[in-house]
Length: 259
Image (cartoon, rainbow, N blue to C red; front, side, top):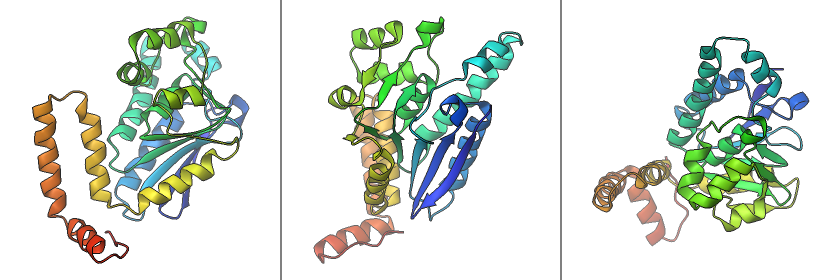
């Protein structure tokens, strides 16, 4: 019932696969903890330059397991609060992880599964993938940071509709709204995500970490604060060994080799 998070590698890319097939890859505290542990290990592994999160089979993630949530109603409120804390720790670890994280979405990304995809830096989705925040359908409200991410990317009225009405939204429309990077043929989300990861793996890791940090902080910064941050990152990256390698390789018309 708890499911598992499978960890494999594809070249320099760590592939984390949500595996709870009996419950459409529903999430659990065990998966949250495994996700945090996997990212902590990957952060300190120079052989890993990117991460892809996907679901086993034809579904990305159905969100929370309603049977487990119903059982938690008989427990003290702290039990569910701690479970959500674990989810939020994983979401936060994805957002602050210094390497690119890509969601490869097939089928449904529902509830916290939608929030999980939104927490990633890039989203590759099958053309028939469906995203939904159906919390209101069962008298609940969002978790996993979904309301935060959506509210910073979409107009308020559309966010209210998605969260209050729990309506489904397809990958093509989400791409048009700027929340999905690539729509692909059904069944090809993982392979396309790995191709995208391979492209990112050729970039300097320190530069990608700077870009991710700058993007994460931009919404909360004034223009002056953001430009100060850009200056600090730029100077640090210029004087990093990879900065010299990147410029030299460009001028010499050769492929750079980054550490």
